Amino acid sequence: MNWRQRIQITLIVVFVIALIRIAVIFYGRSHWTEVPKPQPASSSSYKVTLDDYVTPHKIFPYDIASARQELAGKTVWVHAGNQIPFYHYVASRVDPRSAGLLGPLEQVEIKDVIAQTVRGQKQAMAIFSRKEAAGEYAFSIGTLSQGSYEFSVNEILFVEDPHQLYGHWPREIWEAIDHHQIKPGMNERQAIFALGSNIRVSPGDYGNRTVEYLNAGKPVTVTFSDNKAVTVEQEAHQ
Image (tube, rainbow, N blue to C red; front, side, top):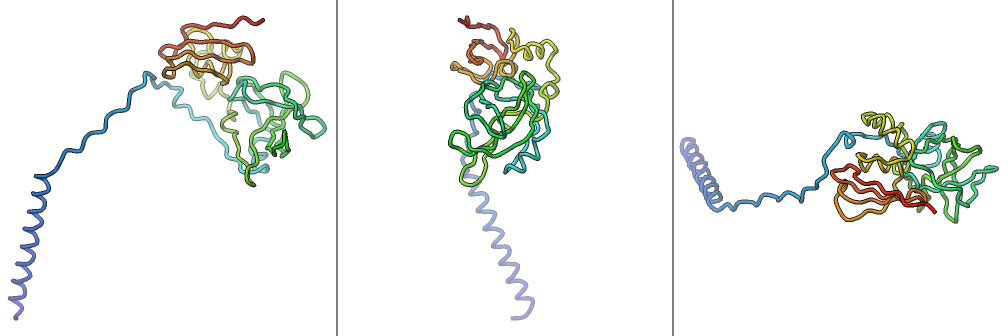
């Protein structure tokens, strides 16, 4: 077989392969089934606002030393208001009897972070001072589990001033929040900043439901529509 015959055979083989490929493509197209388009999820009535674009700074300590480095000597604000118990800190020891709950957006000065067993569990305790009272106090920012600490700093604290983070809120809104009050027109986030995150909620979408703020024993019930408070009911305190 000379070289011309070899070239001819090669061209024939390539041509046959091309014909087969074209036939397969046309066959596949003629038997395609339309893939059903995904159905949109049930839409919520919630509308995105500037609040949703706020990204608070977060920290990620992994042991006592790193937590101390991140927090000692700094001012923080309580995110989970009326949920986090704090304790007296006297003579380098944490008194296991609760001294109260950290208030909504309470500003505290972190002095140190230590490891101490409280109520039978070893915890990372933030030592702090309060504007409202003299002395030193402590609250838990993490627990020891299987040889390593699990921290909850980002869930319970702001490490930046929320007044600046949410600087787009009007002055009158911030005045109400700082006085722990809810006024008609405030949204759910603002209400939590004012009265804390210890809440009970009715069925319904965020911003279109009734929320009871336990408010450290002074419950306030707020009904929201279109993420604006429309009724505010303060339970009579006996």
